[in-house]
Every structure is written in C-alpha cells, then in structure tokens.
Image (cartoon, rainbow, N blue to C red; front, top):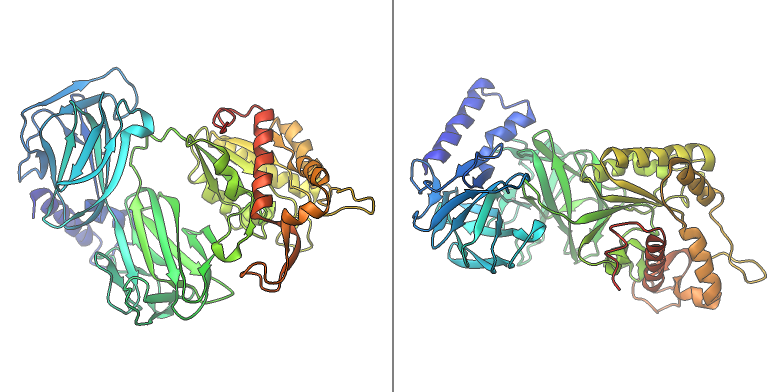
Length: 543
C-alpha cells in the first residue's frame, strides 16, 4: 500500500492508543481516524488553500508521496488575480494524467477546471463526462463516481490546454442492510452490527435490530433491517453529504419517517407491498458523526440500503435555492398517492435551471409543529447566502390539536418571526405565502376564504417586518370564482369510484389538490413572484 495511506493508518493507531483502546468517545476524533475518506488537491503556483495538498509544476508522481502527475511535460502552473478560493491559481495539464493512491473502493471525484474549448474527463481510462467550453461557476465543477480496483486513481483531461484548479476525492459509503448476501461494492450490515469505533459505523444498540431476507434475486433489496428505537451511526469528516435511503419489502407495505442527527429529513417515506422506493437528502456534518433513525407508528421501518456521498468540499454552486416550508398542500407526494399533489411539486417547472427548488413541506404540519420537529433546522442547515425561504402555514394551525395549534395574531405570528429571523441570519430571503382557500362557497356560488384570520395575520406581519407576502389566498379565490364551482372538482381531489387505481372508492376532498390543481396553484405563485419583482427569481422564470 502506498506510503501516505500507511501514514494515515499509523495516525489511526495513535488515536486508538490515546483512547486507551476503549474506542473514541468523541465522534469528531473518530471521524478523524477515518481521514483516508477524503483527499483534497489544490492545483497552481500559489500557496495551497486550507486543508488542501498542493499540486504544482514539480509534482511528479512518487510512491513515497502517493500522488502527482504521470509526467511533467506540458505542465505549467500560474496565479490569477481572482480572490475566490481555489481560483487564485491553476495548472495547465497537457498530455499528462494525475495519479493518486487510494484504497480499493467506490469514490466520488469532483474536478474544478475550465478551457476555451470543451474538456473531456477520463478516469481509469474510461470517459466520465466533460466540462463545456468557457465554463464558469458551477459549470466548471464536474462530479462523477469511479471504482478503484488497483489501488490508484488515474485521472486525465483531454482538451486544448485545460486549466485545472482543484480535485476532490471522497469515499462513497455503501451499506447493504440485512442477513442475505451483500450487493457488489456494498458493506454488509446485519442485526449484529453494533457500533464499532474501529470500523466507524454500526447500530447504537444492536439488541433493538432485526433483519429479514425474502430470498429474491436482487441482493440489495431482497433483505432489510428493522431498527426499533435505535440509530445507525457512521463516523464522517465534517462537511456536506448526500444521503440516499432505499426501502421496500417483497411482501409487505413500508412506511417510515427518517431523522438524521435529530432532524426530520423524510416524512411518510415508503412503498407498497412488493415495491421499493429511494430518496436522497443533503445534510451538513459538524461533529464528525451521522446518525440515522427510522421510525413510524404505522408499519415497522424497513431499510434495505444507505448510500452516503460527500458533496464538493469547496462548493462553487452559483444557483439560487428556494426552500419551501409548509403543509400537505405544498408538499411532494409519492406515486402511490397520485393524482394527489402539492403545488411545490410543480414550482420548479416554471423556472430555468438557474433556480433549485428544495421542497421541505410536510403533510399535517403547522407553523408550530414544523419548528418543534426541527424541520426548520434541516432547512437552515443547508441554506446559503442569497437563497429563499417560502413559508406557508395556516390550515393546520387552526385545528384543536395542541401540538399544532396557534392563534393568528399571537403565537402564529411569533413562530413566523422565528422563520423570518432565522433565514435572515443565514443571509437568506424569507417570503410569506398565505394559505390558499379550501373549496368552500356560499349559496350564491361565490367562493370565500375558509382559513380564518391566518392570511390577514400573515399579511400584517409582512408589513411590520418588511417581508414580501405572496397572497395565494386572494389569488386562489379569484381563480376558483373565475372557473366556477363544477370546474374546481378538477382542481381538488374529487374522483369518481374507479377513476384512479389509488382511490378505488373515489374521493371528495375539498382541501387537497389533483395534479392539475397543484400545477395551477404553482402558476399563481409565480405570477406573484413576478408582480413582487423578487429577483433573481423573476429573471429566471420561463417565458
């Protein structure tokens, strides 16, 4: 094994000695023990950025070093006048490969490069993508997955004098849960896999875990584990990660809520009997450990697999994200609920790819319960400066449930102030959205507001705090009255028996939308974005 990997193992052993061979009590130290998960290289003539190893004109590959260029012919490194980290310098890489020793496994490689012409990327001799000509910002950042089987990564740029700013390499953690055979490239996790500080992963209390194998021909989905009241934990270097969870059972329905480090990430996530589902969520690790807890009051939580991938250590993403905090009328719905949908599902279709929609709205939530369950924290944990937070509550705040109830001009406004202040502290832009009205109309056939004083309380607070308010309540009433009572049945969940396989007995729901209605509500939201001149959102609306 290459020298720099041997050195890392020596450091790992030292950590164990200092810990008295009893495991590392501090998760951050445990994550440091697994430091071989992450390799950061800064290319150029200037000094290396913090935490990065320097790659320059004389950086030829040597076994004792463990990384460098295959040969130095055509390598020329320079400085720039740019102030942005990693773009202060670069190397021209012509007809040479960049090599680095890695333990065998699966890795995500992120390359930061640009050129006057398109640059083709190759890893292990295989094409893995390209960077467009004249790429800037996020376009100059390319991430791909590669499997290492010979202990070394061979990375090439093929183009006209490509400028390479940095390369980041991170281990992808792939866990196959269950007692059956593990899928190729995945680490097996059985009911006996209690947390082991030497391995850096496992269940916090393995006595609360059971696993089952249905014996199908899909090793990743055939088996699963049920963790009743305990978490699966993994030591990780601090940073931002994408976590993918696969759930399903060949015989029974699955449904669960997923929390990561105490914050609700996936709500009512599951699949029908014989089906499987997978979802991905981002999370920022700040204490060296990721803990995933799956729980439900409906069916036992089944986990088939977890895949954890680190995002770019130094992100150059220049896209604006719109986070949605709201209830069931905003949230995304799984295929098993179709044609029921929330307007947040369709909002992204009205924007160019400059805008990213991150829909964190969840069914049955109020302004209060969304905060109490730490779903707002999950948004703030990933919000960056310049992002937007759209906030729509009111329908569930009006109910008698003490876990959700708020009063319009007191506690409701108090919670909204919390959303606003928290977003502004992160450098984000909060936007209040009044709840659309339900399908309620009088004897004269005119639709009226059925959300009580919550829309007015929200508008009053918007004026007080100088925060934009999208008056979806007003817009929805105008829309309903324009199309008429009968036509609103296509907006809301009014279905005849047999019309939808997911609702064989039909439905008469005056609160939730069909896909057509959700799309129309999303359109009304974008009309308000334009009328309020919310930039850069208005500029990114599709024509």
